[in-house]
Length: 201
Ligand code: ATP
Ligand code: MG
Image 1 (cartoon, rainbow, N blue to C red):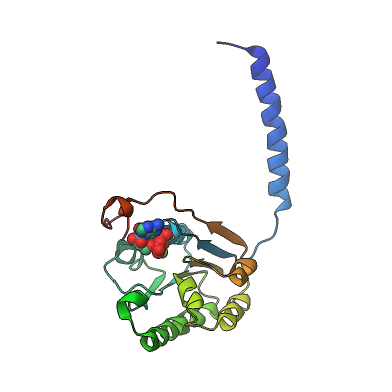
Image 2 (image 1 turned 30 degrees about the vertical axis):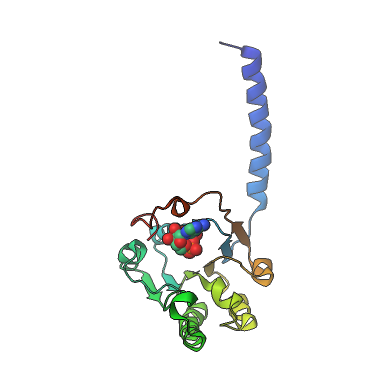
């Protein structure tokens, strides 16, 4: 039903809202590389990082990816994103720690992966670096947390970094510019549905 008074109130309210939003946008003038942490127990952490890779590639950016932990090389993300020009993709894991059951081997693998990541974090030609599942290597103590934080702090000023994985440390969260904690409300796995290509891998 037509309600001219209500329409006028809506217009005035939207105009006030627009003024506030425009002022906030105008005030955000800084430009620099961001450290983004996507953590929490819910699904969507790595998926979010892969979406950002697509965005970055759309802008012609050079992207470096290191997947820690995971050993499988048959994922959709690697098959597609890994072969795009401008992407350098490394899968460095031997699998989850309950798969390998060998702490010494896990530490060696973690350090090999970290060497690749550290090289990217020292090279300004990588405009986005994705460190997928890095958090586990810190929580298990496979990597020295201070060295990792130090490399993040001293990376090129305009380089973006996305770190994913559950249980991000307080220090990493403190250092990050943007932190999203994805909650686990429901997951199909608990209803007996196995990992689905295109969705889970
Ligand atoms: P995704 O890669 O799907 O974005 P994620 O990065 O948030 O997941 P990981 O812990 O890295 O979470 O997930 C690895 C695999 O486990 C994926 O196949 C994912 O679908 C699945 N998974 C993620 N969260 C859960 C959960 N809460 N319960 C069961 N399986 C999960
Ligand atoms: Mg993940």
